[in-house]
Length: 300
Ligand SMILES: [Zn+2]
Image 1: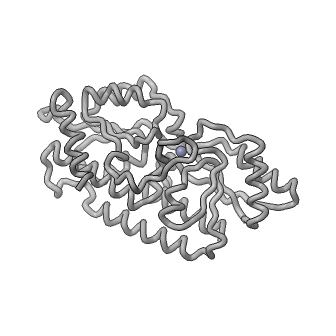
Image 2: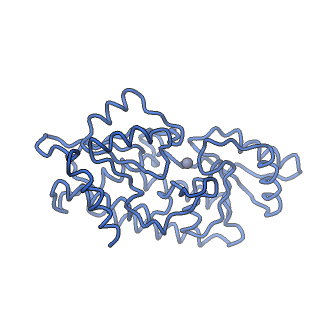
Image 3: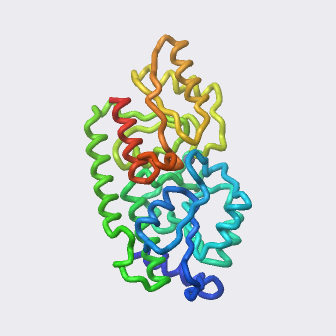
């Protein structure tokens, strides 16, 4: 109920001055990340043009919009971003755009109590909530409902009316996959803290070498602590991420080797961006399935 009130409030903010032009032919929505783009392409009507700024391999924490991106933001009737400081370098631009048109954060459409407090920055939340599929579903559904109400669309206009159900199936599938791993082996070590929500929602301990944002570099001390932990827990595999230079995780593997323990590279995970176009990971469901399969195969 509070969410609905929040949605109404957010939209009412825009009533005087930033209501999209409903007479204009062809509605354009610009999303920041590929995960949001893919969700909206499923939930909104097929004739809505949806475009995103950040392609495969792009790190949203460090991302600064190009002049082409600024044109996409200007062209948009509505802008949708993740929020919780994921798009840290775009905050000023998004704030300015919000005075001109509806500029909606998916994170404003989830219950605050379900967000994870970030250890790295007091008072801020971990922005990677797309890895709790149920929470992501909640945010995207409520956000798309509010866009439907702006344009008075009926529910039959959704491009994929089964999308919410597909996400619920994905959520159940992940729970089953993680539950099939012996409890003491449910430890995920990656380059940065992107998988906290995966850990919390599905019962897996997660450790990232960098903090929540990729802005901070891992030091030698962090690598030393992590290698001791890996050896103590007899962890088989660690993971690199598509958006991050693999050298820090390679240093962890090397560090273990110097201490006489062999830990393998479990694979590359897609953390903050979808996979390349034409691969199974080029959409949100495919990306999550790929990550979970890669993780469970390597740590089992
Ligand atoms: Zn991240």
